[in-house]
Structure formats: C-alpha cells, structure tokens
Length: 480
Ligand code: FCB
Image (cartoon, rainbow, N blue to C red; front, side):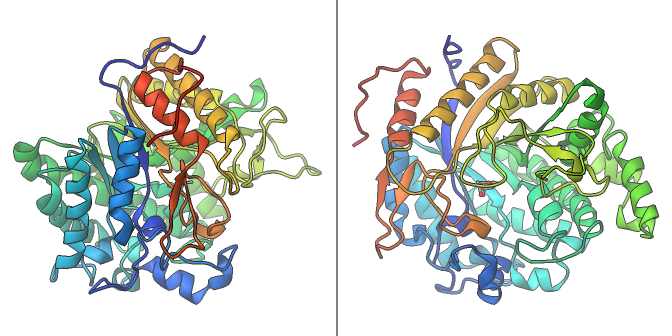
C-alpha cells in the first residue's frame, strides 16, 4: 500500500532561503545583516569555518535555479527575501533598486515556466542596524516588520500569491536568543527566547493584517508563517501529559496564539514557565503576557498552516546515566533534559535528526485535533547526507514521509495541500556550513560557477510529481 494518489490540485515544491543560497553578500547597496556579521566575527562557530558570502551564488545563478525547478516539474518554488538586500538600512527610507530587480528577475523567470513563487519574508537574516536596536527583543520590531512587509507586498504582490511571514520562529527565538549558537549570538537563557517569541507573533500578526486589509482585495493571495514542528511522543503511557506539555511548549507557543479559538499562550505553558522564571529569580516580565488587545490582534491571522517537519523525540523522566538528546529549544520547564530518541529510529549525519516517518502523520493529526480542520501546507521536509549523487537514503526518507502524508490525507482526513522538499540544492546549512547536504541537486562549492547536478533523489522526486502518486515506473529517466 503506497497510500493512494495525491488529491487533484495537490502541489509540490522545493525550498531554499536567501542567506543559505544567494551569496553576493556585499554587492551593490545591500546592507549588512546579522548573519554576515556573525560568520565574519565568529568563523569558528561554523563547522567548516565557511560562510554564506558566496554560497550557491544564486544571486548570479538564478536562471539555473529556475531551470532546476522546471526540470523537477515543481508547481512552486519556495525562497526567501533578504531584508537588507531590499532595505539596506532595514527601514523603508531607501529601497534598493538592485535588490528589487533581483527578486523580480527570479519571480518573472519562474512565472515564465509556469512555476509559482512561495515567498518567505524573513528567514533569519535580520538587517544589522535593527539588531543594534535590539532586534526581536525590541517590541517596535512588530512595526518595522510591518513596514518591510508593506514594501514587499507592494513590489511583488501582483505575482506572489503564497506568503510566509517568518520561518521557524522557534529556531531563531528559542535557539538564537537563548543559547547564542546562531546569529545574532545572544546568550540569554530563559529570557530572550520568550520576549522574541511574543514579538515575532505580533510582527507576524501585523504583517498578516496589513495584507488582509490593503493587499488581499487587489491581489487575493494567502499569508501564514512556517513553524518548525518537532513531533514529541511519550516514552510510555505514564508520560502522556508530559509529552503534551512539551508539544504545547514548542509547537503550541508559536501556534496557539494564532490558530486556536482562545488565542494567547497555550494551556498549561504560561503557568509552568512563569513558575520557572520565578524560581530562577526572573521578574514575570521576562515571560511577557499578552494583553486582551494583543490576543485579539494575533488570533486568526492565518490563511493556512505552514508546517516544517524533520524529526521526532521521545520524552520521559531523565535517567541519570543516560546520554539524552535535547532539542535545543523550549527551555523553560526543563523539558529538554527529558528528550531522548527511540532505538528504532535510524540516525542521520546530523546529531539532531533521527528518522521516524510515522511522526509526520501523528503531527498532522495533532494539528487537526488542536486547531480544527485547517488547510496545512508542508513548507519543509528533507533529509541530510554527505556529498554524492547516489542518495538512496534521501529517496527512502521522501518516500516514507510522503506515504505517511498520503495516509494522513486519505485515511485521517487531514487537509494537506502542499509539500515542499528541503532543499532544491545543497546550501549553507547554518552551523554545519557546507558539510551537511540537504539538496535534491548537488552543488560543487569548489567550482567558481557553483555547478548544480541532480541527485538520484531529484530524479525520484520529479517522477513522483509527474505521476502524482508514489506508484512510479521503476525505470524513470533523468530530468533533462
Ligand atoms: C530548517 C531551516 C532550514 C534548513 C533546514 C535543514 O530548520 O528552516 O533553513 O536549514 O532546517
């Protein structure tokens, strides 16, 4: 049983993000962003001492990127906009003509091949001048983000109909404003993460409401955000409540305020975190509440659910001798100390990633049970390898995950409408640099031209797209 057909109208895409692929970090009047600064100031934070200065050089190779999207037969290509490429100061006092031109070429190039653009407005590359004003810890960022969103809706909204305001706020809030491992490298355990969490929700909400009011009437597009959902299961029945709390403290903190009927922080979490803050001597303001107005502002600001999903964890009371595998986010109730993995889940080349395909189906069911019958777009799903074109493990991952998604659609009645493979091509994988590869296309980073070559998985994915099912002829040929 391969799960059946994908429903008519189901769409397939592949994704990238600006900092990870564009390069051209200082061309023209582009401003400096937090990633540019972080990788230059802290080269040893990146495994291979590399950076994204050139990356895949998609700034110059965009035509090849469009060609690859067409070779795969993608319905849409997900990419992100570099805030400081468009607004060099971070503010709309100056709009870069070259920045706008670059994205126009890309969007028009896709359109010419009948490929839609799914555009992420923010994928972690905050303009440095805004970070110097506090970045995501300054409440005014909600307005700065809205101003930036206005610029990009105005410039690209006639052709872009699928928008994501922010990518994985849990990663850049609970990650980067907590442990300091990612840009901007703020070390502020317990505090920074929650402040960022609240502000990013307000920023998303303002950008969504702006679209709804001023741009939807003429452009009729759809806006959401991409949340990173780590599926968390109880190790055994006695940990069911703990698993639910962990889900609320990760997925819930970035979903409940937007997608639930009640709005605000998810049930149980506020009490637990407030208690922990208090115990550690922090004032209550470090886990900011929402006012009634803010709850209303944020609630309902979506047109669909954007879900990134890669992997799963088990949760139980920590065993003193055990090497536990934390998810680096969602710190406060010390839940991370209780995360572990199943011995049945195969490991991959990155330490945070174990393969549990059933997790994606359970995660989808959980979303439906929590927030009702939403339209869900899978905005990222993919598998890491080292280099090489013969990537059977990646094919296996895609096949198994797509099968679980089909079961979720056809058996559980979950309304999944889009699937985005991460990634179209190998790219700068944050702290892993270029050592970890997520690409359907391999990129030769020693070649100044950054030549891209399809992997076996690209051929596989192209045939899934063509057949609209996992039941594909065995002798599929290479994309041209
Ligand atoms: C996600 C990020 C994306 C990519 C994948 C592997 O968390 O959104 O940029 O790095 O992981």
